[in-house]
Length: 454
Image (cartoon, rainbow, N blue to C red; front, top):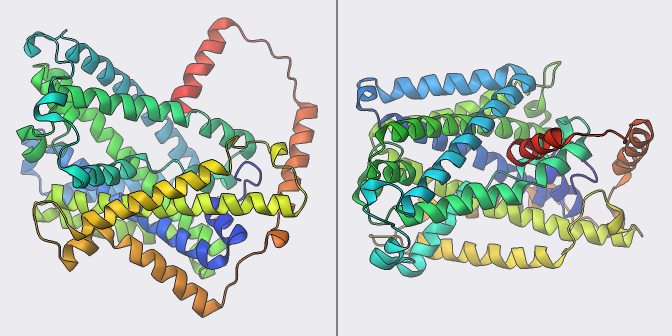
């Protein structure tokens, strides 16, 4: 949908144009809310990372929080170019760090580290075992995975600011599967082999919220690498905080640009920086950061990550529903889906299956919110982890009844803006020399850059 019509607003606009305005409002507010909540979540994590080094505890938490907020603000205030350079460099550093940690843990579990006294292999999968705590354990893993896996959808939000958006978005999306498989699945697979789930430092550890990666390296006795890894984790969470503020401000401005909320929130300066939505997002997210001053960083981080995880479910559901409606609109207007610049070859079946998965995970999270770990269910425990769900439906029905919005018919969906991009592609293809010859080295470097940085 985004490569076909890469306009400002991304999937928020798609939900409004292909489903109905109330749905776009609910998805947009939910998306903005989740990224605002990401700001305190990442700063809480950054503060916890510093606790790994005891000498940092002499500085008040509020001072660290303020410094991090100022850094995040400055990275966003100086425009898209600075933001892009900062994220480019940090992404490269993060990729190197992840590959180094994966390589280290592979050697560790294979018995290449003397401190492990031989291969670890699948020892911890047998004792204390895998898939513990039944459905509650699986449900809790789901919400944490949602928090980590969420974020790829923001590519659609910034497509309107990209140069050659059809090409840029396609190049950004293509390697996501392989990055997920490498940076998430392989990483978690190996760390699950190196650290048991009931490790005391993992449960009660300070610093990086008891990071299993740092714990694994500490168990191997390579303390210098543990410090380096902790430093990389610190850079990662600061980078995520910068991105959270960027996406939150752009999503709120997009809602205003689409006339879904008041135009005041969409005001921008001459270079396109949203000077209203940016401070609003940072002030709201930054204010929540100071909850961490209660010395309950792990608890606060858990609240925020749960809220973001549930919000991510609704964002994905909105994308799947709008894509199903998008295909119906193309069919109703006699347009060939296979002529699109980027398409899903298993659509719409993949979207229907994904909606079933979303409903299943939402049901698991509802069960966990009603019957949490280690305590009786209460209204407080329910809303602390599941409040994003009732807020979504409150937003939807409030907008629908107040503005009397209606579903968009498939025959009335507007695809005219996409025609301009079709013509642009034809002109660019005619003017571009496609006979460029690359040597083997340059091809290898381009593929490596594409895989790691896009």
